[in-house]
Amino acid sequence: MTLTQTAPADTGAAPYKHRWLVLATVLAAEVMDLLDSTIINVAAPSIQRSVGGTFTTIQWIAAGYTLAFAVMLITGGRLGDIFGRKRMFLLGAAGFTLASVACAVCQTPGQLIVARVLQGALGAIMIPQGLGVIKAVFPPKEMGAAFGAFGPVMGLSAVCGPILAGSLISADWFGTGWRMIFLINVPLGLVAFLAAWKFMPEGGSPDKPRLDLLGALLVTAGSLALIYPLVQGQEQGWPVWMYVLMASSVPIFALFTWYQSRRKDSPLVEPTLLRQRAFTGGLAVFLVFFAAMVGFMLIFGLFAQFGLGYSPLKAGLNMAPWSFGIAIGAVLAGAVLAPRMGRRVVHLGLVVMGVGQVGIWFTLQHYGTAVTVWNFLPATLLSGIGMGLAMVPLFDFILAGVSEREVGSASGVLNAFQQLGGAIGVALLGTLFFKDLTGKGHEPTGTDFVHVTQNMLWISMALYALTFALVFLLPKRAREEPAH
Image (cartoon, rainbow, N blue to C red):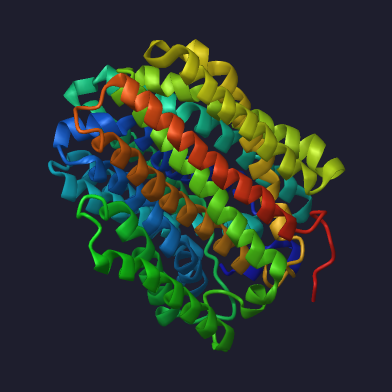
């Protein structure tokens, strides 16, 4: 069944009878992806103690997943258009589940990094298919309810993710320790695969576009040229070729942009998007915002365990107010503030985040290594509320001037930049964090961890200040007429 055949709006047929089961299947896949992109914040120290490796290993375990997900996301969506969304969802779900098992049985850091990269790449094949299928099987009058289910489910996953990871590691079921955080994907993956096999209709683009292999290779090469030196440079002493490789990412991305603007047949990115200032400015907003957010959240999780000696469960509970605040801010922004305030709600969120970050700094300054979860709670909750206020409306504002024809490509690019920003943040802040610690000339103490974490707070706040300035490139309102 094709996309147009399953869309009630196009055919006038009765709504697809299994549409709510299809939605549940897609949400199960989204939960798997969200959990696996956040659990490393809590699990990384346990993993390092188990399989060994350097601090760089921790960065690659986190960045490898998000980087692979980012560079494959646009291509994954295009594969669904070409070969059918159900087929690609099944391939992604099966592969993601197997890659999760591979992560769980790894014995060396190198094996785990490779398995995480595979997991991210296969997740990028699975996730884009879900939105297209939902648009196909739900009638317009139910579309709002269907997409409205994503917010609570993803918010709950964000809140429960760190706690779940900490609980599973601390419980040490059957002696699995940290491996259970990957094995938990097996039942979820099997349910998603079997439900999709039975209930998900076929779907794809009736135009049958071709895969832009050169475009995919260019965006992959540019991303690796930027991320690899950021993660690996410190460990290798920053040789000259590292700087050259990092600088080469600029002409590679420029070549990708030029090539997409001139490719007539099935480009990865609609060329008209690249000529819109609001959209390209939005990409810069996404890159900087998620670099600061994801990078510091990893640092905060590492600090709690390495610096304060928290157990994985306690570290997860320490991050729970942050996640809970994101859920609160998301509801406030989407239901109340964004329609009234327009673009200013993003600025408000960034200011609230900044106040929360300053609060964390002063909490560390006051309590030092004696700080508790309860001491952190007001500042981390406030930071999370600010994140939710700023993050949720961004999609609407960036897509305000995008036409209906461009919205699919635009959404894929934004999601890719979100993941790429996260990978850059992990690489950048992680490198600076570990460089400061190892440059002390002695084994880092708890006090050293406190001071270095405070330094990372200033860096993340500087990135949020840059985000504040970039937001002025966005439209003032989320619902403006397309520019063309």
